[in-house]
Image (cartoon, rainbow, N blue to C red; front, top):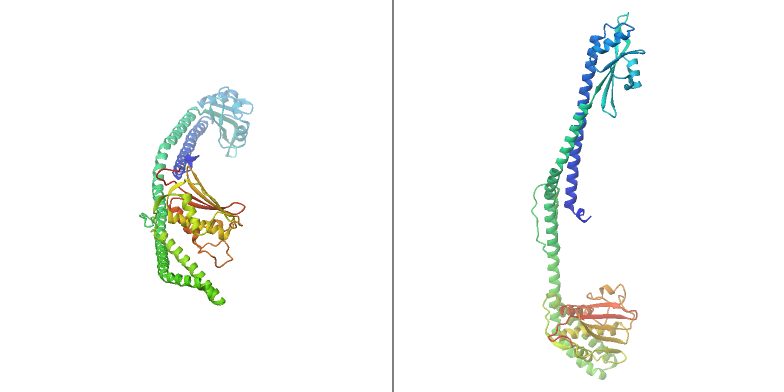
Length: 470
């Protein structure tokens, strides 16, 4: 079935079938025409010969004729014929039972010659019947009552017809290789531009938006090529505009983020002073100072995340790899943020799991995954490190409500919010996206799922060690 699933085999079969059907129809029409011509020729010859001889030798007959006259008359015809008058019949000639009652009844009731072709077990035959006419007293010609029946064998004609049929079918069979050759040629002519279109479409799908095809001719395939070229040109223009807009947007975000870092650094210094002196300030002023300090830290984090994500977009993010004991690196990251092993945080970090990682980027991944679990989940948060033959995995589980199934497929998208009802959140909305980008930069990945009692994020990193995993 697979051989017939392609366009080429189907075209070849279609062309071959059409050619064979045409050849068979032509052979059949020729056979029928030639057969009719052969039979009509022998039929007309037999009928004319019988009429001529009856006309020449039938005048001496008296009415009613005697047996001797019938015998002489039938013998003078020099044909395989029998003469009949009532119950009398000539002694020579074919048996009257050969001629059907229908033919004899028609001859007896009409003045015209009649014929009938029959196929017997031995051979096909032509049966002809003719009434002998005589002049009546009123001068008109009428039936004398004498009838003549002749039998002509059609064996030779049937043999000629059979040979003709054999030749016709042989010619139809010889048309098969010609049909196959024509089908191959036609399929090649049709499929060549189709293959070119398929190749061009594949190149277009791979990102080669400048691919074009030469349009030759003015048929439907040429129109299809022209449509493809116009579509590719419009797609190239649109994608070019989108890429330019995307580049401008990224450059704008990067420029704004970099420009904000200097004033934010000054603002952070001021807010640090405000935090230290908040206890000495009036209550309302202290609340305002703490609010300004919190929003400044939030804005600083957002700018830092935007700068980080802009590096990924620009392709400027680089790895600084070194071999680390992952348990030590992860524990340092947790300790730096005040997350200690206890009731709210349960860690399982076996020592001796070595890998070559970028320590700063691993710290960002751990901070984002664990911080996300504390913000959106419930304690205890579990952190487990495992090593196997395929690489290293770090699982971060919480015991919260889990991730909304509608949000789960987009949890790593930028600015995705777990709770869409909240216009603002403590984070920047970029943490998980940055964590995923850092994991992929290491050649790994991060997946998210619901466990039934909370959410689980799994970081997978390949083995990139110098001495293997101990």
